[in-house]
Image 1 (tube, rainbow, N blue to C red):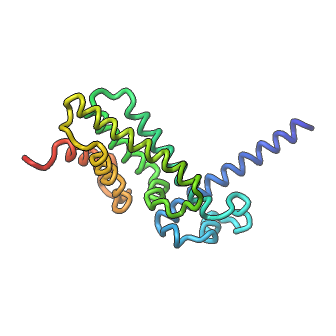
Image 2: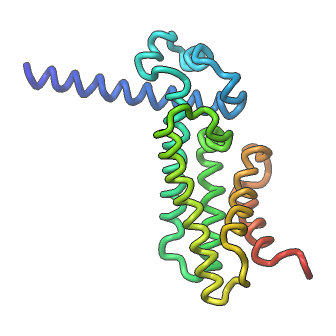
Image 3: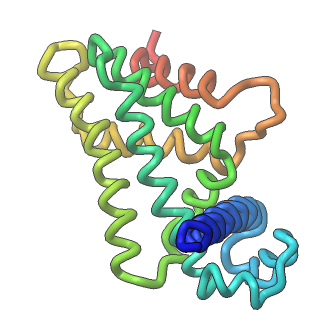
Length: 204
């Protein structure tokens, strides 16, 4: 009898988690396509096929939904890129892999990544902003370290790592505004072109 209750409890937990994943995925697409301010809880509930009351059993409001999307996505992109860069050879190679991995994650998680790029306006709690800031800063510091190491090794000319890092990330992040998943060029291919541009410059 006790085992049966435990099994049922575990099944309920699985169902709740799966429902939450579905809500987050649908909400991310709505936020990405229509903007955070435009989307209401009612819109999310209708898109998932739930009543507002049922959705409120999982999340207290759309701010909590957005916070979950943004924090989770920022953490995942940071760890994903770190994993891809680890073990790379030269700093030039590390930089190219960083940029390509960043774009690959963006394309494979386009709705959550685009929702993240909308900014932090949907985060109304200080602890939420702190979590996102931690992963964002860690991601940016990883890039700056590659640049600093490249300068120290003589692979890159002396530049301001902070300025160079912001320029690279801004270029990659701006893809959220114009990239078309059904277009002929993949996101990582654009990233490779950007890497070539940053590494080679424009001057002949």
